Length: 375
Image (tube, rainbow, N blue to C red):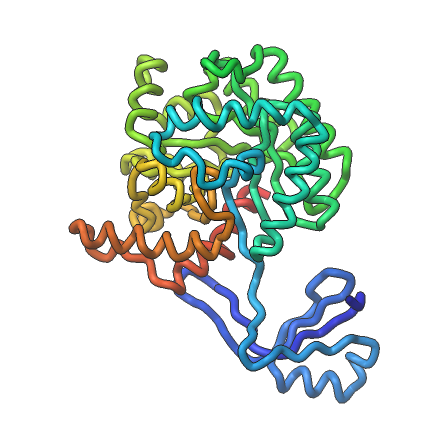
């Protein structure tokens, strides 16, 4: 493809959750950067003045349109080999039986590189130009994920997962080792000096991290001014487990907040059962939610009230959450977001349904606001 290209045809994008703009016009790209957008009349005027003499001009077909790339705010790159497997079990059982054993394999750097290269290409083929990834406990393996994103020019936040609470699979690290390797991982990503790929500090969730680890990780995120991501309130038994383990805390959010994790650069997946008080905390601190309708349904976790989150001024984007989610397509997440919100309306929650314009926004600009928060 030419270093200079201008597309002519229908352009569609969201200005806000209520305003989807579609028009016939042009989009100009120079060396991979959008340098101009406008109406057909403007294009013809500029063309007549010789503006595009050294550009490749690409006319879209009548059945084509150009839109922003999808943003996947939450997916687990190492879990792609397990897509569709083990959806007969609730979250915590599913992790122990299927997920942790698979993720343990990524200590093999060659295996990690092979899988991650395919994952990045698959997401790009699905139209996902930006992704927020969970890796595994393994520093070197997770660096292969960043290298794949750089190789294929995908914009990505890449995280090395952190866990220090013992589990039956033996998949965890000692606290000091975990903090040291996370900081080294962040430094390595920053050393690549690639404007498309950045590190994201990644405590898996409060079920697998104690307060010492979470506080240490939040300090690393602040030190390097990078994003932080985790899971919250995905499943009722998960919430019960967290509040039992962290006695003296009133809510799941409080566990994270006291550890310094809830900031304007924080992305929390799921948030199915947040109280209004927790939503207020999210809105005030600028925490974003990655809504994952496929995995919430497949793992029988619950129906996330996205409309209620939005009404409480919480930033929301969409996530595929592979492999709890059984599709790597954000277009599938768009459809399921509409379905779940309609089901909530059927259950007596008036005006909870998300329409297609709003879902398009969540998949593009809403997701962009999530991964750009605090930047």
